[in-house]
Image (cartoon, rainbow, N blue to C red; front, top):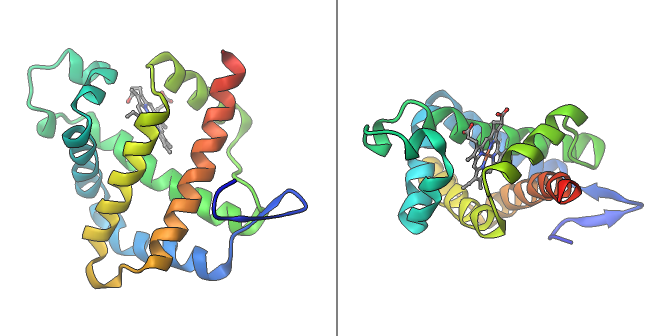
Length: 164
Ligand code: HEM
């Protein structure tokens, strides 16, 4: 179990934690594509081999940072983590339409994404948000994003494991 507490199976994600995610996201979202790109370049800096997972990077002659297909995935990770935070607060769990969650599980399994990739991605996500929000960054903000990301990834991994 992550930092979030359990209460009759429901995850307690406080109004303050939700607030931390929302205020930082509001600051970043107009440049989400650019931050998303930085975010993934950080991942590839730490784990260059992760590039091989993305077919459009593998088969491309364009430099990674100019690949137009990278931004949408990066933005999805941001947006879905943010949505997960909102749902944790409202519903006490990550709510993603069943079919979408199944698809997310299937896609990540198919492309060979493993625990280490999710971990590096978490680190890079937090570093990117820290850079984006500047002085607004705080331990509370870091914790709120971490908890939301951990729960979202746990939901994706549950689906991946069901397919193995
Ligand atoms: C595809 C979200 C983490 C690698 C996707 C898609 C989404 C998504 C929405 C498109 C699925 C579709 O085809 O409909 C997320 C979320 C993540 C996450 C929310 C974490 C919370 C990761 C990580 C890696 C990764 C850690 C590897 C470093 C890929 C690859 C694809 C993919 C290789 C398929 C190629 C592509 O369409 O971009 N992901 N992802 N993802 N993801 Fe992720």
